[in-house]
Image 1 (cartoon, helix red, strand yellow):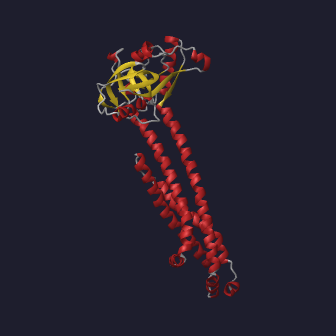
Image 2 (image 1 turned 60 degrees about the horizontal axis):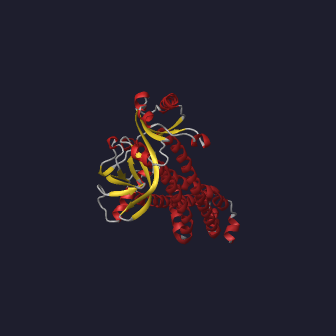
Image 3 (image 1 turned 30 degrees about the horizontal axis):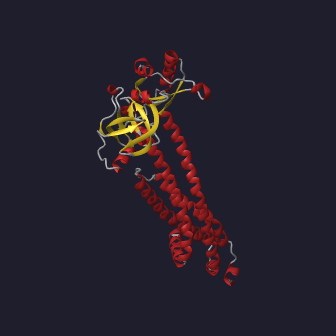
Length: 393
């Protein structure tokens, strides 16, 4: 009953000093809102990155030549036939997709633009999950044919010139005329997929190696037969390349990247929460200042209550409840502000919106704890006030 009366009295007191209460609320609202928004956005970014890897599959890996500097510059790259024999020699590998990178100019209708390129095999589409929105992808039967598949960016470039359906059109790339046989959809960035898929053109790997000044294969993608076998797969690949071509390779699996990304994003989320907590502390200091002003303005009220029999604990509880209530209201409003901010960010970025229940509960709970912590000193000052001095104020 006493607590209920204190809550009612706190509401009246806060309402009677609306402007002062509003100023104190702003600090708590911004503090809680920023913590909720930053922590939730961090979790959404983590989930989005992991989702992209899950969609591509965690059984994918990239294999590169090992070594750096002069030793690597003298290396002639991997042999295409050696790579193609891997699924038959390594029981952990299901399929492989070697590719080479190119960089030249893409020309059409007198317009020219710099463009990266990839020489790929037919397996490239399956391993890297390349969507085809028009035409078809490169086939292993294309051999040395001057066919190409446009990435989404270059398809938009042609569309700006009035070529809405580029399949069948001719473009010049690497000083060779290529016939467009397909258009690839956008592939999420930040995954294993080479950025050239979106930004450039893809041609048969044999044609790319014939037209390139440095026709070297230094990397290839592969699909393992299952998950959780990356260590075994790496061992088999290293042994195979040592036997087949006396080369050292290193493998990076999607499982490793997902685990590493998960650790990094957790640390990043904690960092964002710590940054947001700074504004929450500032808001707490604001609540304490407001409560100290309230104590100073209500000295006579405190003196009258003490004179008619109120204990020190009663006075302390009243001001403590008022501080906690003020912070709790700020926490609820801040929660709404943070959730609204996250919803707006997700709407513009296309991320999947969700609100962590733990973050929401902690946000409101922390706001109440902030009110209790920063309201304790003003409440104690009020309870220890001398009744006679208070009545003389």
